[in-house]
Amino acid sequence: MDLPKVVAELVKTQNSFDSVAYAKCFKETAVVFDEGKTHNGRKEIENWIEKANKKYQATMKPLEYSEIEQTLKTEVSGNFPGSPITMTYYYEFEDGLIQSLKIV
Image 1: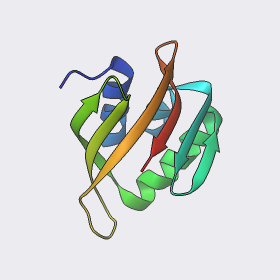
Image 2: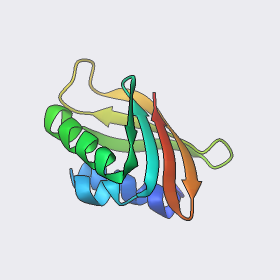
Image 3: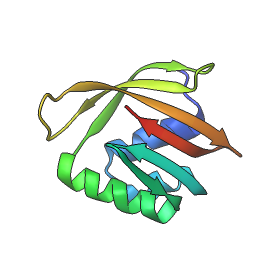
Image 4: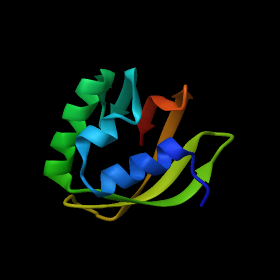
């Protein structure tokens, strides 16, 4: 699957539970929407993913990427009921980094 470089890096850092490298995939002013909460800025995103990694130990397996819709459908496995589940990541990019991410 041909993923944008920053998306491929995001998957790699998620699967290695590297919250610092994960956060570096985002612009300083980025916003993440997940589980009904908004996380603003790179530092807050790093804190959010670090807590999520400890709680869920989730890994991502890309299933389908749409360049037109800027979405990535993934199989997410981890420490949570119903694992694995299919989730969709909605991206907005700016300057080769992620400016916005919504996970549903």
